[in-house]
Length: 160
Image (tube, rainbow, N blue to C red; front, side, top):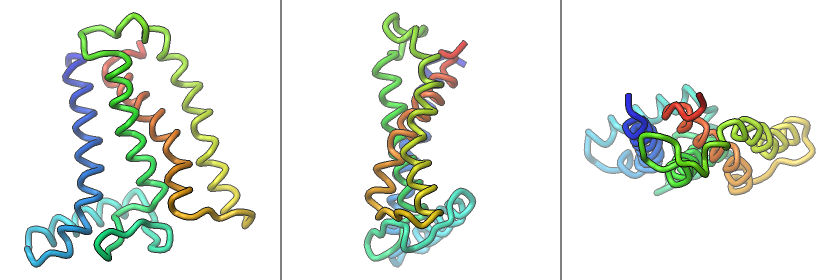
């Protein structure tokens, strides 16, 4: 598979997933049966990757999103990360020269980017600090951005 196809495919998949997460509560509240089926499918898929606790989720049009605020931050961050890797490395058949040294740094960046999410998880589990949904989503953004970049780099075979 060519580098361009891989990057476009990963980018489209992430963007469609984010759009579907936001669309689910909107179309689920409509009277259209197709909307109900789509929303039900999104909530079912969301339940496979997320606890879906209402108090830890954003709500749109009076309905809970299919994933919690932290997961939404991860997915939105991933969309930014994919876009960033494409902008940084280019869509050419080979990784651009300025990005050639970055694949190894991405692995270290992933560990560093996970720290805010881990801190928010651990402090909540231990009862020290339980941030609100906006903070949970914001603290998940660095991990999502870095993971999105790393997945893009892997799919484009920029890590080899």
